[in-house]
Image 1 (cartoon, rainbow, N blue to C red):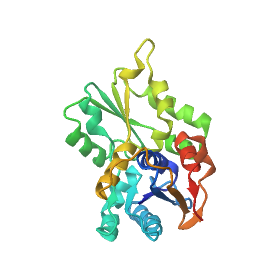
Image 2: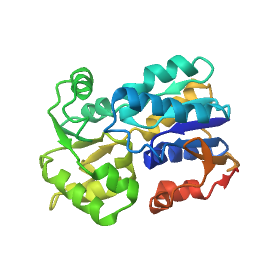
Image 3: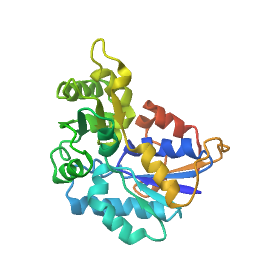
Image 4: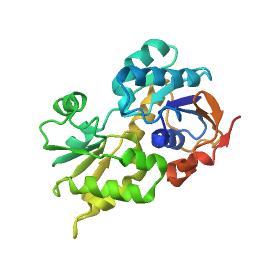
Length: 263
């Protein structure tokens, strides 16, 4: 079994690690675009072209499924990716976990990039899935870039700025950018209220859901106790390379770094 994931940078680490935990025997292909990151500020046409390029590089290695591990790429490029790759390779997109966050009751905040915050796409998701819950959209300028560079000071600064915009009564926070899942515990700590039970605040990412969906699309069951025989191939701009140094700053990156690499 082989699962491929695409993103411009290391935002795909969370979903890749989730696949690894569900199926340690699965081979992984992670395909990025170091020369074109970040994708967020690009036009939809430019982003779609670049996403197709990295997806084609991954598809050349014959994966059983491909995960678009980027919210922005899912918005703009998913139809083109599915048109080109399916039905041969199922393509799984990443959508902010608004529905499960709202189902838990209480006010919800959505942390997202400035381009996504207030967008028609996100507003439509809120209207469809929030179920009448009170929702606050929180822009997080610079946070994805800080995570991409593993810049500790910038992460602290941008997380604190977003936390200051988050209402104190929020019970659930949707991590609306895949990069944010890599610093989820730092986000939780920044939002913790004095005297409050930290378990009352729930963070909702997409990594586990998309990993599970990828397995379902290919008819595979989770097997977390399977032997850890899966291999890792890293592509950057279509070329075999190494995991970026910044990836090792995160638990998810270190998990993948311990997987046998292919060259």
